[in-house]
Length: 599
Image (cartoon, rainbow, N blue to C red):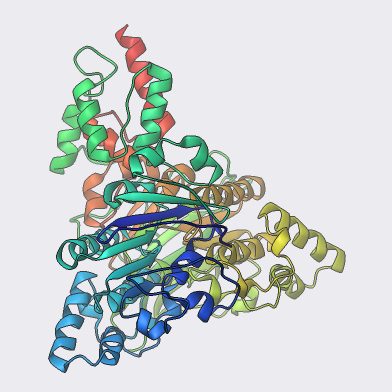
């Protein structure tokens, strides 16, 4: 896993570890507090020193006082029945006075925005909320070195900001050293002092983020992506002959608002009036709202009127029967749901997805996204309201039957994987469908090949990395070719190259087999690139639903929902470009056209 790694980290430094899935990042993190090899086994050569101690020969319990480790999968770190007990557990083992324990618990929960969840069970929280609990449990112990293995992967933008703010505070107030595994180049550029790129178990480069992100060949080989504004600089330099070099949004905005390539007076400012309207929340009204589902209750939201954009069909998807009526694959009518003893998690959700639609569901952690989609395959049953699958009420239909129609990829792959080998895991669903042995083998081999899992076919999935386990769950659903796909955060833990490859396969299935795809994600780049339509949830309600491009133009709506636009879209808004810009090539083409018009 690791091959001749030599790395020095200074006291108080913020080092980002980047690399493709299975490049050795987690193994390196585990070696820093002695879990490798004391708990994992294996052979280790060379020497590791942390705060003067050798983790190979120091008990893990002793290393935990100095090295706080937040695991990649928060559920492997949680075991108490209440959130506040989870935070207090490590502090109690340190023998701290009760008053200090209470003070630290309060501080840690407030730091990650979970003060109102202190009495709840961690296992009743969303995946992103569980991640915050795991972080808070380590933060409370204020270790000298804080090691975070992709701590923001399952968090919404507000959660990411809260976690990174407290990490920065710890650096300043405690002189804490931060080592963070992170795939998001934009976060790395903003917060890290240096970035180390791991490639095939070796350190390929250690430099400032600015220098790392301009090594485009190395990043491509390592499956990593530069910040969108860095890719924009490269694109503009190639197309317009400029000499830009920026890696942060504010830096790109200052440079481009000063230079404004395209016209003498600043070719990117023609929509300045629109920009000021958007920021003031007075942009022109949206077109006529979508028709409500018959018999449903009005959607309630924190905005005066919920924003429901007009239905337009994806051109590649046949939604119309011979008689001219649209085919609805998934539909909810006034859907309400509460977990036992808790408040409503879903509040009158009414929506309709056409057959062959590709829609993203976005919103803050705890907004009800996962709870909603678990109703689509019968894992949860509504307290009130209806759910229809291709027109049929599925309230009493068993999960085993629904699974043939609705393929569900869980947020946590360990909730889905149970077979002794990867091959058996992928073929399990096919065997339940009573397919012929030859077809089962053919479909399994196809899935192994498409998802590049052949070398892991006979290995236990439990021994593989989180990113590979996630691939296995998607491959298992792919092999069954269901007409409806539910993907709950399928790219968490994957490098950008692997995430794109995975989503390309999903998109191909959507186009080839006209499958309905519902994608839950916090990665708005994926939404912009793959999902023609987008549904925004807040507080268990549908806040907005419509075309992604139109929705990205409603910054005030997204702001209410705590959603951040992709970096390139935000830059376009700030510069006053007409219409939301969804990609770097689109931004460059816009600038090139303006330059040509100016000439």
